[in-house]
Length: 74
Figure 1 (tube, rainbow, N blue to C red):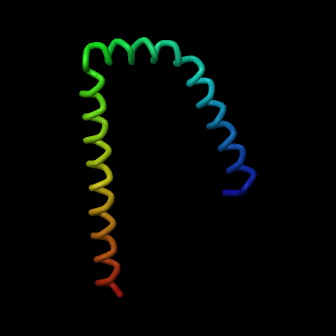
Figure 2 (figure 1 turned 180 degrees about the vertical axis):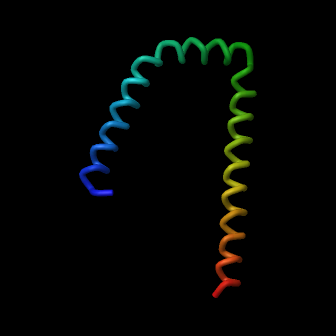
Figure 3 (figure 1 turned 135 degrees about the vertical axis):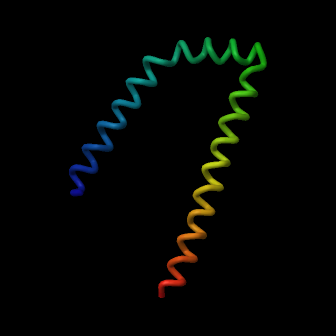
C-alpha cells in the first residue's frame, strides 16, 4: 500500500471518528450519569475489563505457541 493511500485512509478514519464523537456526546453523558447513579457503571467496567484481559491472555498464549512452532521448524 502506497504512502499516499495510507495518509488518505488515516484522514478519512479521523474524520469519521470526529463526526461520530460530535454527534454522540450529549447522549453519552446522560446515559453515563444514569448508569452511575444506579451503580451499573461498575458492572459495565467489570465486563469490559474481563473481555479485554481475556483477549490479551489469548494473544499472549497464541504468540507463545507460534514462537514454539517456529523454533521446532528451524
